[in-house]
Amino acid sequence: MVKPDHVTLGSGSTFGTSEPVISDAVRFGDLLLLSGRAPIDPTTMQVVGDTVTEQAHLVLHNVGAVLAKAGAAWDQILRVECFLADAADFPEWNRIWCERFPSPRPARTTVVAGFTVPGMLIELQVTAGLEASH
Image (cartoon, rainbow, N blue to C red; front, side, top):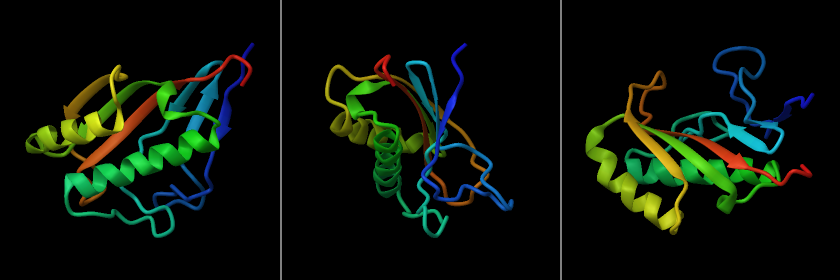
């Protein structure tokens, strides 16, 4: 039976507890499932940026860091779930999405949601495919 392999950057994600409450990602077979990536500076654990543009770029940077730690690449992303705090940010998110992901793009869902962290405007949850040898 395949067992999950937890990927961590060691960046915190304690959310007020004495130990991390999430793994940055979990590798299971040939899938890599990233926990929600937020516009959080991993050293200060504070939201960075006042606009969806600033926050989206940081979120994508954070996604890239987890992918790299797991030995994956951008072109291995299969699906992205995007959560926006404001539907008015949807056109700007689409512009940034098209810059980051040239065609053919991964599957994507975008929903408007409330966040428990004040100031957050965007969060991404990512699923990537890995080579079977991982």
